[in-house]
Length: 104
Image (cartoon, rainbow, N blue to C red; front, side, top):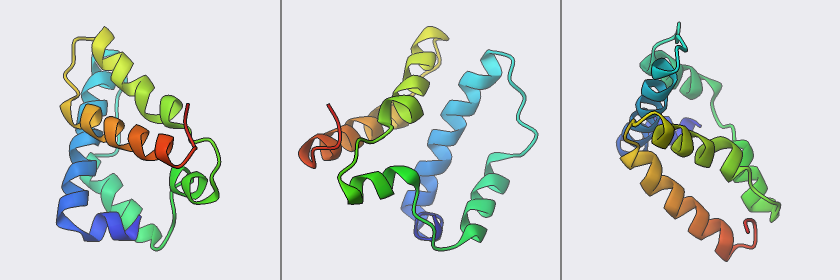
């Protein structure tokens, strides 16, 4: 998490994905009491922590791509909310996971 937050490019990418997901949630009536930028700061404050999907990838285990990312993409389709950043990252993560034997 610290590495993602420390890098301008990956922080911006994560922020955009979070905003896309938040727009979907809000269209479904979900209220987010903590702003995206504050959530990102909190992730950075956690420090050197590996996400569960990264841990799965490194260990060659099935990744929770569908539960964590594909589901958000699907909700975007159902609510007519665009998810261009989520779509791009999902395609890349799926490709990597397939190549490593951790998906499909």
